[in-house]
Image 1 (cartoon, rainbow, N blue to C red):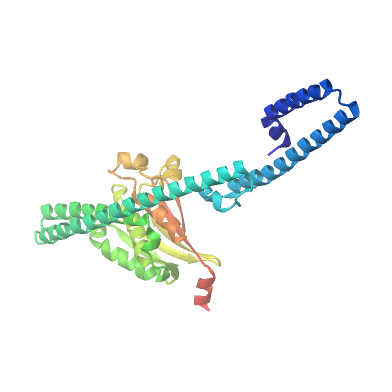
Image 2 (cartoon, one colour):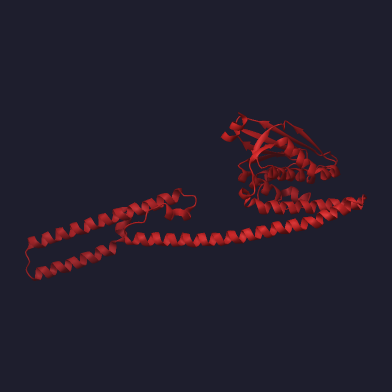
Length: 340
């Protein structure tokens, strides 16, 4: 707070004080009070006003400067009332009380929203599990009819199953910190489990998977990593080049500070102008519009999971040639202790 702003805010007080004191001097002059006494009274009055204003300014400046400074550095600005002390002047105490009441109201609203969101998430999870039962039954029935029509039914049922999985993981990703277990996870085992789950889709598409250097363990949640790899495989099988055998290569490399997991396919690739947006929510891009129906949610969920698990993800591609996703698993002190 600047002294000039404080003075301008108090301008009417000074005008009223000056007029009032001028009337007092006129009153004293009417009673023939000596000039020396009037000068002394004026000096005392000015000293009183200046002292009072300086003290008031310094008290308020200390509080408001601290308030603004800490507000600027806070990420969660609604916690500002916990970062400043309650001031010792009336206006400051009123401001502090307003901040406390606003924070209380906001916390109550957030709590209501969290409860509502948790209830909705639980309903979605329950619904997905209920839907999976008839889907699994239909898949079993379709397996018993090994003809072209049965194969088509199986393909559509697998798509439904994949979409329900996507819904389930999206609902859980909003509170993944309550649903994951970070532990040492074998990349080789995780890739094998994912390939086994996607075996029928891979065989039906006439695709193949190549692996290299997967004898590495990383600190992550295996279940969530399997879901991410499943999304990569689903996209590779969806966006293929006609007449070209789809080959997916999964490899890993260990660096001093992190482990990189690469997933590369030889599909249609991603247009350069879409690369920066492939992880955006509901973004389908040119490929999604031209080649297949897409929700644009799969890679968004993958990106969200990586952020919550403390990993990073990147993508590079050349249209008509390949697409490569890279997940980076950071090595922390715990990881180094495990190695020792």
